[in-house]
Amino acid sequence: MSDTYNPPQDPLVVIHADHQILIVDKPAGLLSVPGKGEHLSDCLMARIQKVFPEALLIHRLDRDTSGVMVFALTPHAQKHIGQQFEKRRTKKTYVARIAGRLEQKTGTVDQPIIVDWENRPLQKICHETGRAAQTDWRVLRYDDTGTRVRLYPHTGRSHQLRVHMLFLGHPIVGDPLYASGDARNAPRLMLHSENLKFRHPDGGAGMSYTAKCPF
Image (tube, rainbow, N blue to C red):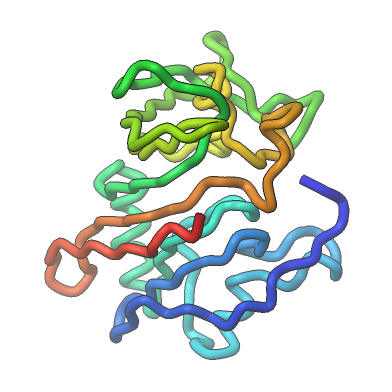
């Protein structure tokens, strides 16, 4: 992550809104919540609360990740959906471009993750102190420089998808923290939250929301 924060000024993209929930398409390069310091105050949460003052946070996406996020418009919705995330009852699907050719078409990474204290904000795999983390992957197609994959995290550890792809030897293209060499040369982190499934807090109906991948 670079020291300069120059978030995109794209207008807010609302995918869905009702009396309980708000679904938006977060742009890459915008913090989900404020960082430390006035220069990091511009964030998706602040922009949303200008339009929906009652909006409440449920989960986050990394600054450089784009795609579907759900916000609550009532405390009930915040608690209800928050528990679904906590109990792993939500289903998240991401699209990523990774460096190199991932020959195996499908698979699972099951590697525990913990913060790398000496190199924060980096995370690392550690079998002694790491928290359980699992990610399924499926190859979508190959191109000249890498592989397009769909990723299905079962857990929600910080930087999980980025660390797990690095573990496979195929870091996500454009990743300023975990990629190196040519793999870093991209206009953005090539990671997008494509789809989110959860149960609606009013009645429990299954909901599914998608944001088209921009790369």
